Length: 204
Image (cartoon, rainbow, N blue to C red; front, top):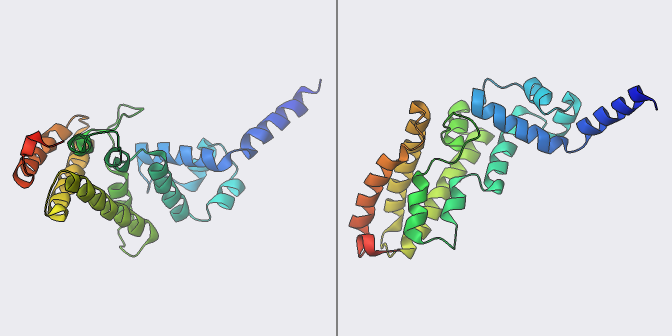
């Protein structure tokens, strides 16, 4: 048996198959631990592992990689959208889950990936910033739909307030590395809900 040839073939297959998925997984880990700006394409290729040629075949630029990463977060259900669209969960409980810190695979507490991306691409006309803004606006619409289920007559102002609380809690949780920091924002959110909804705590 030609061990060298076998090893070469195995390595080639490992690097050639599923390259896009491995690159996205590596980018997610690196972006979360060291930030988007500090992560280079070469680092992603090495961590995946894929060749730089393969990486650039899937993502022509780093901007393309970042947007693909954010889209994958949405697709995978790893964002707050998943909590808001659970038809099997009562509406008020869906709102409460906005303030839960998602389970992390490290000791680090992560903030909102869309806010992080927008901060690292501050030009509002950039593709990454625009996509992040699109997702934050979508979040407000989803919250508005949930509070409408609860009987709110003016859902958009309440949705903006709740989104602001959720975003602020996520950012402070990250800065303080305190996974359950959202409990403070939820306490404030309950006051807003009780004032805005008929029946308050009895709803949902």
